Image (cartoon, rainbow, N blue to C red; front, side):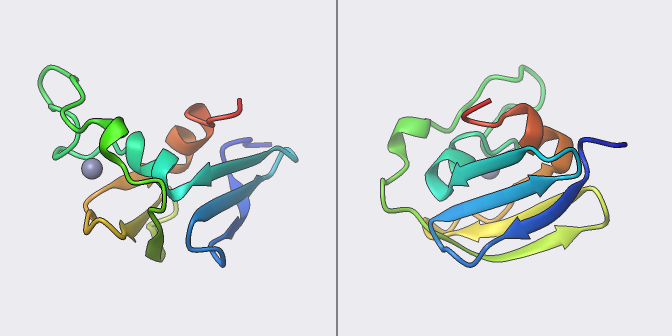
Length: 100
Ligand SMILES: [Zn+2]
């Protein structure tokens, strides 16, 4: 069984994303938490790996919209601060689970 395979991704709450995995684990991100780990080239320097976006700059009331799948390995979405270039692979989402 591939534990990095999501069975359900709930996006009904615009301030949260809940992922239910094939192994029974559930991962919950607030929109702000997901924004804070965004791995895109605008947030992380591709050469040095240094995060250029400050997670502390994320507003508490951040929300998301337009969540959709990228192929069969990732999701992408738009945050209410206008950021929309992040692609979040399933494995990344599991590895960065804010509550382990
Ligand atoms: Zn980003």
